[in-house]
Length: 411
Image 1 (spheres, one colour):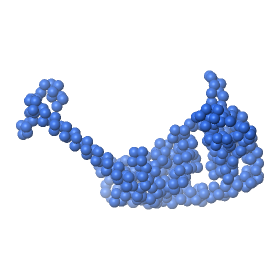
Image 2 (cartoon, helix red, strand yellow; image 1 turned 90 degrees about the vertical axis):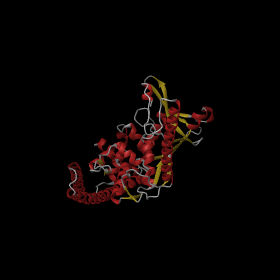
Image 3 (cartoon, one colour; image 1 turned 60 degrees about the vertical axis):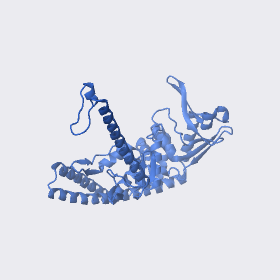
Image 4 (cartoon, one colour; image 1 turned 135 degrees about the vertical axis):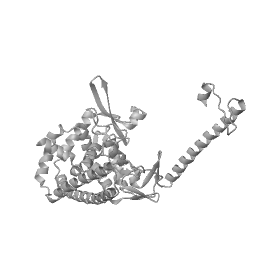
């Protein structure tokens, strides 16, 4: 109608009483248009309210289900072999603490995202993993039996695939790595004691910060209370970063000669070796199940004369799965128990002093988080209490990356 009015054209309906040439006709048309717009908005609002109510009841309200689930009678139902793959991806991230490395390993194993076929016969999904897709999976609360609506999280009516404690652990690791708004340990001015150093008098965390001009920087840790309420509110508001970090590193070097620690690492190395084999066996079983389904799908596609692209995509997926399954079975058959002795562990830890300077700053921060639970600094008494994790440096064997880095550096 605006176009008609712009060119001074009147609209006259032959079958209905519409005539924009008169003032009454324009009034009636505008009233009808307003009602039509009102009806559209009401439909949109009712649809949004229905979706919100459905999600608040914990029900799935349409769309493609996330990997690991299928839909049966409007409910999410776990697909066992897909669920196992989801758990393995979570375990991969817990071991690597890297989205990129997790995605790389998932692709090496021939894993792909959810693949489905639309009603028009088009194929969607089945794509390689990247760090964004891994991040979306690791932060999806659907895997712990919940559903989201905007910023709200509600209990779902479906079963969880991932243990809530594992999900929480992965979320904390993502936050520490800076994926959700925290600063990454990527520059030479980042503090290796961030998150573990506390002011003993105020029982508040001490934040790493720096000041200076040009290229010259002065790093220090400041009490959270002093930072918010003024330096006069804390008896020991700050301490130079280099001073306290050097002291903690020296304590770690002494700790590296602990006999009990060496026994812990020895036991953890053998336990990790057994867990690696068990993980390979679980992955092989999962791939075997996938292959069985893929072969059945291929038979169906050929029998129904499906599109060539769909057949080629399925065959490519089968080839990659068979290659990965062969690799796993060879690795399991050729597996040999690790040969590590107390003497070799003692030697490696004894060389920590040499290797420390070669470890990247970001990994130093992670190393501190693995070894130390908290550090309480009392500037008035001049004391520093270091609380190590109960398992001590045995967590190095669990994480693996630092132990390998030290060994490779020394060799």
